[in-house]
Amino acid sequence: MGIGQCFTGVSAYCKIFDKSNNNGGMVVAKKNEINQVNIEVKIAELELELVKLKIEQVAEEAFLQGVEYGKQQHKWPPLLTNSDLKEIFQCSDTVVHQLKNIFSFPKFPYMKARYPRDEVFEWIKNNSINLNSR
Image (cartoon, rainbow, N blue to C red):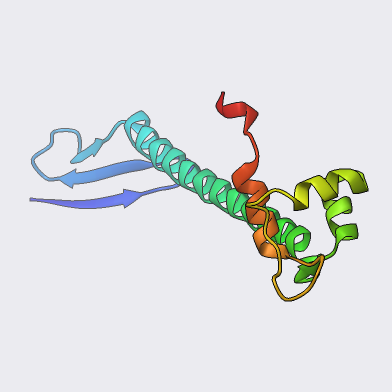
C-alpha cells in the first residue's frame, strides 16, 4: 500500500510512496501535467471574470441610457404648449400648426393648445420612419 502526498505551488509535484517500488518507493508525476491543469483552471477563472465584467459594463450602459431617456422625456411638463412642440420638433410655428391639424396627433380636450407629453412622444415614435429598417 502507498501513502500519497500532494504539494502545490511553483514546483508542483505529486509524490506517492510505495514500498514495492525498487527506487525507494518514490514515483514523481510529471510537472507539466499538473501545471497544464493549473493553467486550464486559471483560464476558466479569468474567462468567468471577463464575462462578469462585460455584464457589469452592459448593465451600467443600459442604466445610463435609461436615465438619459427619462431625463429627456420628463424634462417637459405633463401638458405641452405650442412653444414646447416648436422646441421638441425644432420647427416653425407654421409647422406646429400643420402638425396640430393631423387627426391622429394627441390633443388635450379640456384646454386649448395643450398636448399630453407622453402621448406626443408615443405619437412621434409610432409615426417616425426608421431609415435603418429599409
